[in-house]
Image (cartoon, rainbow, N blue to C red; front, side):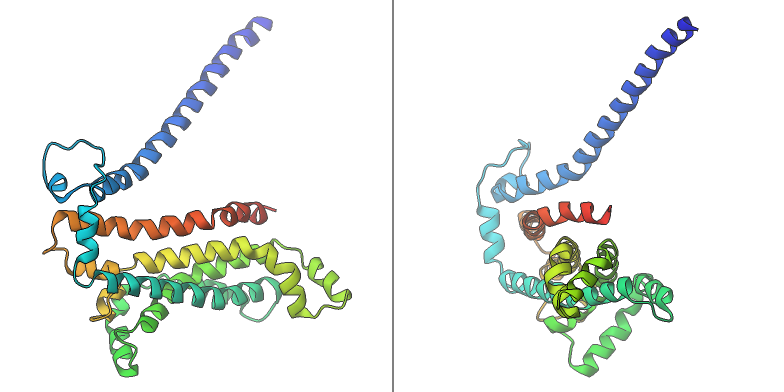
Length: 281
């Protein structure tokens, strides 16, 4: 018996070591898969136009901002960049303003059709946007919302709203209703209990919803290309001029699309980390 145990022990150690090695290798491969394109993007964005088009490549940035200066001076870029920021902020505000109350209602109240409503919220993502492009364009032209930041923000809000509702629903469900009831017994009404007790606890979920809404709006290109002409967002503007743009402009434009999303995620990272602790209660 002791011999069998002594034989199995090294085998188990080898299996665990192999599993640990495969796990670490998978993480390394995944990181390379995600980070390498971003690294190459910034290397070319921070190099001169001649270095971007020339060979051989060094793989390191020369920190020549010629490509960036050319991108910023390109006609229409600054206006498109401002439109992207405006639409993304409007989308973020609308998604949180609509999604958070809906998530709270789903977590705190029982009403007929509650489960069907949750399913319908998710089903809004089941319809491909290209399928809805033509009726949306006709509707927006008739209502005067075509080629406006607010009209595009409405479309982006519809895309981001399911995430906002489901994220805030899970967060509100993880907070015991007894906390609100205790605040009611101490003289708070429902709004005061929500603002003083629940809202500080769900801020990580609200921040996560804001991150999703912002990035969805910032990177969305199809609706922006169809519903806008003069007031295009940056992704739609870059796609419009993709065939006639030099290579260094494309790299600088790609970096301009990535940087704001990274900054926004970095700014709310502590809320994102805190969200997992609340959601796993």
